[in-house]
Amino acid sequence: MALIAEHLLVHEEMLVKLQAMRAIEVTELSGEESVQAWAEARRGARVLQEKGFFTPHARDDVPNRAEAGAGTRHALVIEDDESIAQLLEMRLTEKGFVVSAAADTGTAMSMLERAAGFDLVLLDVVLPGAAGKDGFHILERIRRTPHLQHLPVIMVTSQVSDEQVLRGLKAGADGYIFKPIKWEALYRCIRSVAGA
Image (cartoon, rainbow, N blue to C red; front, side, top):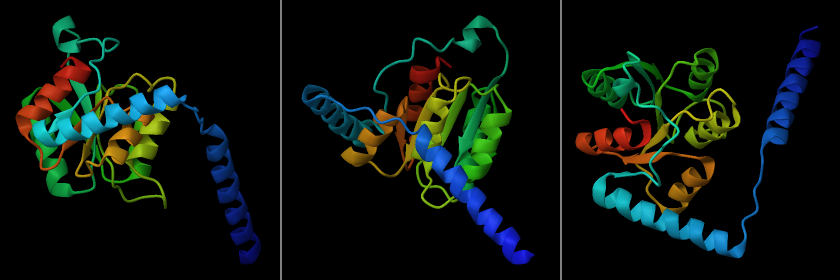
């Protein structure tokens, strides 16, 4: 009986992985688009190292809830380093955010699926959780989910290579913050992408 249950569990896990693989969309870039994307990633990595943050473009589809008088803003911090998560929570709270936190990919996705009220996500790249899943996978899932796809997402990372920035841009990151975090840079990045 235990062997049958184990076999069913393995089969179910395989089905979940196959469904996830079917949901992945691949966009082929032309030669010119590839060159432009790579140039943007290189510029992003350079700006990130110089300023401590990078936003490829300001978001004009995100309302400024503070100016609109819409009340409390909610941020989700997805960070596995407890001390960094606590610092981010403290700094965001000082700026008027109510902050929720997740320390792994599973908890983060569960929180995002249950709550539609987040105004901002700060997302670490390297996270524990499902094998082979990281912050980029969470970002890709956010961008594929209709009620979350316009949610501003800032990558909080110590990985500043051209390849990492390009991967984030392709997945739909709205901004990058480099660790160790420069707090004024964080606030400017948040204002740029979330209007907060």
